Image 1 (cartoon, one colour):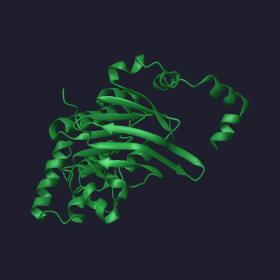
Image 2 (cartoon, helix red, strand yellow):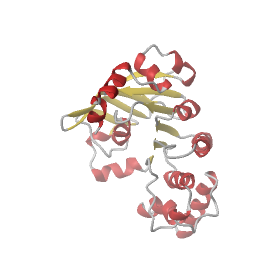
Image 3 (spheres, helix red, strand yellow):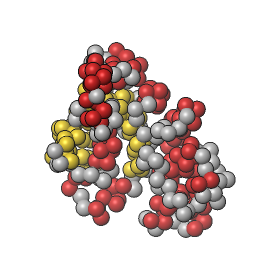
Image 4 (tube, helix red, strand yellow):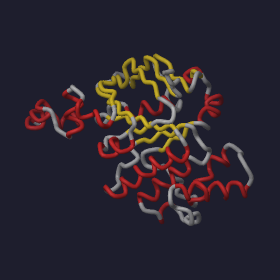
Length: 265
């Protein structure tokens, strides 16, 4: 069987912010057409990883490839073309409050000077229908629920027909039912568009539902690489505690002594 060439590849990527090391020689290959879920504790570098994939951050060391192109060496101008193929769904949705739903959705088309006004309207209708919101074109973000805002942001993310969609905590801030609706949207888009997805989340229900593969980032490196049905069988204490939502004995002792709170502040 011929090995599938990865669409995204990170090779020995390291990143620090001042004295804080976030990624330490991280390797990751993303298979096209699949959903890779990245889990891990808050602040472990999951969102930093996504920003390296789309070129918003450059590694201190190592390289990032989109297909066979090393994007770490590209200028901002050169990255524009690469980013047309990679959509980024930010954690909060990042809609423009002063723009209508339609204006938000077609913003990438306008920015890249793609299509006519009629084609913009047609594409807006098409992608809003995919996320179940066609007919809300004239509303403003303040008139939408939290789940609707996420779905509008998702419609905007796919307006250019990307090959890859990066999701940064897509279910954060939503109740379980709305969160599950976003999970269904992710599955629907992968099926309808054949996209590759990288989903960063700490929502284990979401990770298990949407993922073809789950990797866990912990203390600057990946410590697990498995599938949803094998996740519970990973022989690693940190992985077990994370998926069960169980604090370590050391963390509990720190909490009792007050050292944990002092450190967190």
